[in-house]
Length: 514
Image (tube, rainbow, N blue to C red):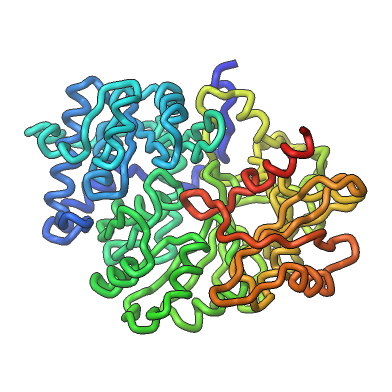
């Protein structure tokens, strides 16, 4: 079975238009030539300069025979040149694979081979690693010199099924799967995101990496509308606040760990953030106390988005509008359908706990070169419709708000009882000495496995692990009780802030196996 035969089918809804990023980009450049398009640590480009560079890159790619069906890869930090490469690749009708800079060289080599990219662009910090990888290497800092003197005349008009980009996971073990986003996927996403105010007046601060869909879901609509992107090569709390004030930032897309660090900054209140219209959060649920703090001290709206890079499921929580629903991730986005299934794949009532599956206009084609993995993520409804399995456990309440409990693979089964780590973590976060927490399953001779709390103490707190355990267990059900609390200096996270529970569990289970 080929990858194409294993593809997932998005709803064939003629009422949903398929916007073309290349055409929208070109129109924005023509409308706002003198307006600032991109700002990074090295300077800025107005829309005339930025689009000229992007179209020159497209022309040079075409000269290399890279057009519709062609692929390039990038290993780079955020910058104006990286954004121009992204745009130029799409203008040429080709597909870009932004590689995770957090991956090991051997994993990157596998990704590059898997992607089929013939050119690799790398920024200065990663050029050494890039030299060890297959393919033709081009330094991103040399992009101006490399790009053709004569720009591409017009963007290549894609078909909806043409590949737009390939998004790889971070690659901590093995070879990650490449998620195929086609032009239909991105076009429908472009249509949806302006509902959060992403338009020609937007000044977006980009502080998460471009290889993450978290970043692209916000950045691409701004470039398609003719707004301004301020690029951070790497997130830094003080620098984020400085840039927000200096450039009168209106929007940002952040992950919960970034919000935590910003709200904990001692001088947060000294910065002028009054230009903010909306802040978006994704990749993990925002704790309710953190949401309240953001709403109290940071101007502008706050929207929590739940979804997957694979697409399918999408929910939105307008935090200010629904203060009594802060323990949820909101209601289904327009055009999205969700169902709840049990461990055998049978459909349950929406208000019962089970695995969430979703279907929407934006759905990946599948995983590149991995038809078996594509089939594993598919759930077919009794009517024969394709849904994407999220691996998340949850339920919908009577008002239609989604309550997430845990990842299916992270659920703890102790003595035959299902324990959701999210419930235990929610209780532990309320303890005054706890700054961060992860609850994992560890081996137990008596119960098979049992919950262990890994806690990062608040700065200056004299945290007592046993006292925290007793305090939490007094507030938990009998079958939920923590076996122990261990203090940690920090918790391992991915580049976009997700706690790496697999890494936390591994030493305990390896020891048990031994």
